[in-house]
Amino acid sequence: MSSFHKNVFINCPFDNDYFPLLKSVLFTVLFLEFEPKIAETSDSGASRLSKIKHLIRASKFSVHDLSRVQVSEEGLPRFNMPFECGIDLGARLLEMPGMGDKKCLILETEKFRYQRFISDISGNDIRAHHDDPKLAMKNVRDWLNINVRQRLTRHADIWLVFNEFEFDYEEILNGEGYDPNDINALTFTDVIDMMKDWIKGWNETKGE
Amino acid sequence: MASNIANKSALTDKFRSAASNHSGRIHIVHATTGWAVKREGTMRASGVYPTKKEAINRAKEHKHYRGVIIIHKKDGSIHRWIRS
Image (cartoon, rainbow over all chains, first blue to last red; front, top):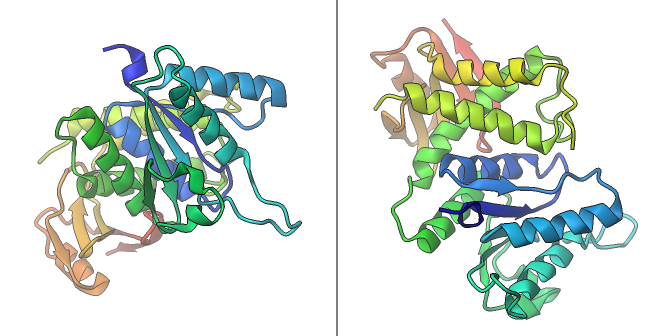
């Protein structure tokens, strides 16, 4: 199977409040043997957009979390997530070569909140996570399960294993002098590599 | 983006090693229907109980209990340890 069919573009907020949800989503994708594709946030503006274009082209699956499209203290909304979601949906809508097979999941805090600021996306697969990492995991797992047409591990089981990972993540990062709750303590590439190695170790020794 | 870790391979090795090293710890994890008791390295919970307190008591009776229970918050992060 080509990497396109295993790649999942993750378009989500990068802040400490969202970090528990992001870890849950990344762990789910990796545990189910897909490959998360995420744009590191510190790249320059022009190269970041170019990178996003590349990630969208390279990924059959996309997860867009619009739950943090909120008005900030300065009175301005955060709009990167819906902007990138629009590029992704546009690639499919405009029938770009090879993009017709793309699958997209849109996550929100509440089920119909998006209708108040971006109702044009109605008709897509939009699911609410209520800021609960367990529910975000269920949404991603169930959506992948439908789209790959094979029986994937239940979200309730992945959640139990993820909690075990969370213990090791906190222990190891604290031991190394990093703040495990700081989304900037490691790069996302680092976090993904730690998860991959942990899952590999866990799968090698798991019991019933 | 380049990693900001001095020795990344050593750190990833720690993760792999930690995942393989099931030290008899038992985790209390929030589940849809209550609080699950789960031994490290297993896929399934040994039981799910209505309250966290009941789950802790059952964990202490678990045949693989080795004196350490890890209690998680609802978001999966660590709430506290119990050692006896």
